[in-house]
Image 1 (tube, protein in one colour):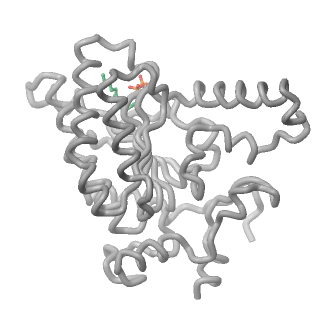
Image 2: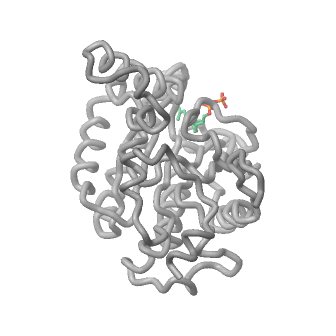
Length: 289
Ligand SMILES: CC(C)=CCC/C(C)=C/CC/C(C)=C/COP(=O)(O)OP(=O)(O)O
């Protein structure tokens, strides 16, 4: 059944036959492998309507709408940012329970530095608290954390918290949690170009060797080596755009937009997104068989 499931899976593959990522792909569908390793049966714990063989392997979320959530309640913006944590913890918990292999969270873009300093400072504290409050749980639950973005711009205390949490969770393998803070999709592409150009300059690489897979290996998302491309991208709060999130990686990602503001995003909304994903016809540019 494993092979049958794999053959039936309409998921995105990356790179050509020479891709190192290709060889790292394992035989069992990851959702089954993860579920088995945490003691869940292949089916049964999943909410009714979700099919294990066609769950997204990599889910990305843009956690938008925190300020508007606070405004609607007559609360300060900071209260909205603080309210992002419970929804995020629940999304991580559900993703793991349902066998999602990679969860990427877009929390702060490289353009968000242009917001008022007070708001930015508060947000950095929120991200720090989220990591510190959860790292022990991540260790217990087999969650491997990695922060992507221009980390050199983060306050030193957050750099340390992120680094320590990455170290503590490094050997975990149930689910990869990728947190984008000071992340920009264009910036990621540019830094990859610079690294490749340097290799060409140093004669370690020939221009003709540069292909999709080699390029993707230089992107920050390549640390999660099995499924670096999101199958599903969810953006909350009703905005219908990518806002510079994983531009290269999202070429064939299914998009799901909801009006729900991030602090109100819970199990029902997550399920709605996954059900929508399961109803999509992913073709990757090919003619339908
Ligand atoms: C200070 C602080 C906590 C900022 C957080 C900003 C914020 C809304 C984060 C939510 C996630 C995010 C990076 C959205 C990108 O949209 P965008 O709002 O950056 O881009 P847009 O202008 O295109 O909607």
